[in-house]
Image 1 (cartoon, rainbow over the protein chains, first blue to last red):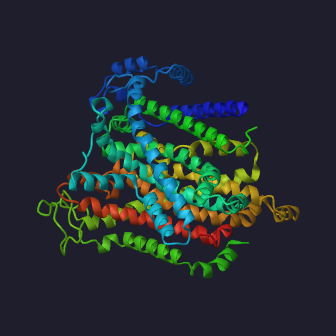
Image 2 (image 1 turned 90 degrees about the vertical axis):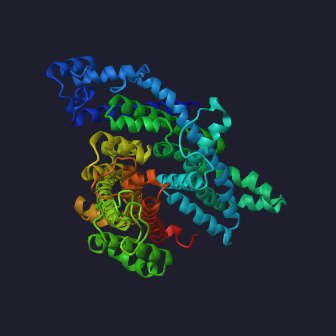
Image 3 (image 1 turned 90 degrees about the horizontal axis):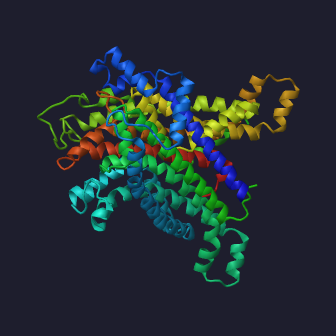
Length: 317
Length: 284
């Protein structure tokens, strides 16, 4: 287990390094002079002297490998640079917004598991009866429904037509739990549907597979109650692929959260990214890329560890 | 088994699959509607008119008009052209590039294999929409750029499938025999390996088409799609949702169009997998 952990950590660092280098190269290959961007774009008509001083300030006049080394060193110490447009520290801004995005992603994943796993089990246990295809169709629709359509429709029905919940905006928990929950209910539900559908499908097929194994027959012929067989014997083995899919979905939800944050005007990482892109604010975009890569790799690591914990047969040496 | 034999043995059975017939028919119908859009659209999709603002359904505007008075049906038909052409171009490029890289790295192994597959794994571990947002954000969102970006994010999937299949096929005796009788490497790759790895690639192709269309409309929704006046489902929804309290035509119909299209491609991919993958045959 120890060597496995070390190997996975090395892998994590390598992945981050690759992402880092890719972002650096990408930014230096694409056309467009960052110095011009800082000075407000071509429309602002910057003078050559202004451009020169900005290049010096940003270190853009140095050779590429030295810029790379500088950037690497800065990033390693946790400094993601300063926004071109608003002059705030990207690290501080990102640290402020990441918890808000997690405030959407984590409850959504929880909802997905709480509803997805039982529904998947029910579908598997009623294979061939009417309830199984019904659940499968619900899963297929949930999986095919794009996040931006689902979110827009929820706003239309729940907020505009029924007037039950506010259509958009963010309230911090410090201003009252009820207000915070009512604001996050719609965005969280929007994000939860896709992972729920996937977890449901995965649970169904995984439970079906386990049900056909000999030890389940043994457990049943011992006279154990059915719910006990399902919960203690079947579910534990079936959990492994479920955990994997949940871990993978968790990463994908960062993508979904960009869309959800836009629909619901939620000031998280996704909005920061879109604003950064709209204003060509490269340090902000870079910062978000690196941060997401880091969080992502960590989630993958945790998924792998859970995996090993759930199934002692999996050897990592 | 060569590809022609694959088709011969599978076709009659495929025609008995109701899901395949249904989803295939749906995909065909959507493609036809997109192709015929300029002929069958009642109006110019970009035609703005103050008189028809938020107009309800009528003979001349069957699905109503949006906040600028543009005909919703015409925009949906023309939007289908944008979505389908971006999707088909990008996924075809991804299929070709991914198959070639996967085939080569699976056959020749060595440093090429480790380099390409490491890159593929790294790209695959990030969500496609995030990579696409980053890339479009940096290089801009012209139609050509969109095709390029979507092709880049989908290539690794094809590469990995082609790679894994090639790895198992190349161990077969008939590949060794081909070597022994002096067949050229190109011939082995194209005649003996490629036909045998096509089935899973076709399934992935259909699935990826639906997802690429979804990706394109998602990017358009975020304001990162093709610029106006190119009609686009995602942009139509994004613009119209700000007026949802006044009229829902501009949101509901394009949303339905996207959902049906994506569902059709997903169902088709599902049905193809059931038919082409012998291990799944007969399983629910």
